[in-house]
Amino acid sequence: MGSNSISLETTSRSALLLQARKGDRESLARLVLPYAPGLYLGALRMTRNAADAEDVRQEAFLKAMSRLAQFSGIGTQDQEQDDLRAWVSRIATNASIDLIRKRRDG
Image 1 (cartoon, rainbow, N blue to C red):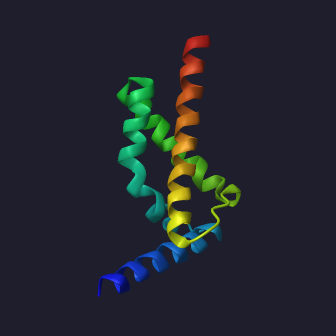
Image 2 (image 1 turned 90 degrees about the vertical axis):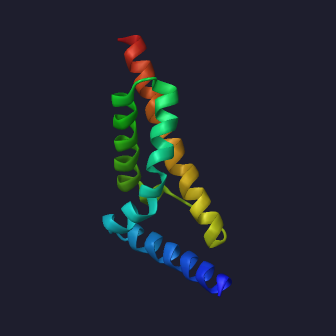
């Protein structure tokens, strides 16, 4: 029973990713929303400001939605999910760095 649920879960994630790549924003949201707390905490550590961290998280989601065609997760379905997490996290990290630079450089 356990392996069937795992297989179904990865199949569902793969189907969501396929739908998201076709422009289905709800599918993309279902894929990336589980990462929201981690993205927020990572941005909070970098920016040291709760409002900025929320802005960074929102920007990361918007960029992920608009740039999903650039995501090239290749490999097994589990690897693809891990790659998606890393990709969205990198977007958030870059957004945090950009915000810090913007504030620093005025």
